[in-house]
Length: 238
Image (cartoon, rainbow, N blue to C red; front, side, top):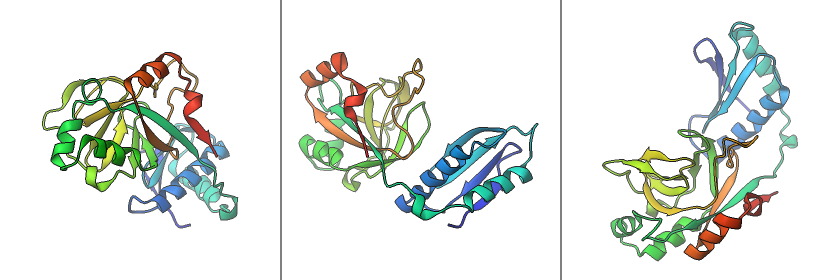
């Protein structure tokens, strides 16, 4: 595997693994992120993966760019492709697409694409989405795999308040708001599952490298899951 290293200011090394957004490159991002993480490098303060690169932040008062690049190159050059694990985690996220309550932009989106609302829901729930990275908000997933017929521009005027759990589309992306936030995504549904819990030891449900499916549910099932559902019931390991 070929990679390029370059500095990010005086406190990070960026490992570039490709120039495009692709599943193959992201497989490398996931693999090398895990390698660097497991190496438990001294002075590393954070490791941040993206679509095609990994930023390794370090304490510049205790080490320097040259030392860090030497360490990272040594780790990555020890890679054995046969050691890669094919296992993955899939979250099956329940979503209520009820227009009157949870999907204020569903009708508009259907009209724009000359589809019925049922067809929009079917096309949105059909793929298994890859979580490329987490950003923008705590636990907000940037995912690939949206049906191209559902690609829709952001709202001309963003909303001042989008409730946590809102499922939306913006351009070629679909995502889920983990916390209340302003936002301009086209909202087409809502999940009763909490994606971000600041009181938990592991506050974000979704992780880089996860896969996610949306499962359409009724308002009645939504309320039942909200009251009694366990997050573990919607996670598939393997």
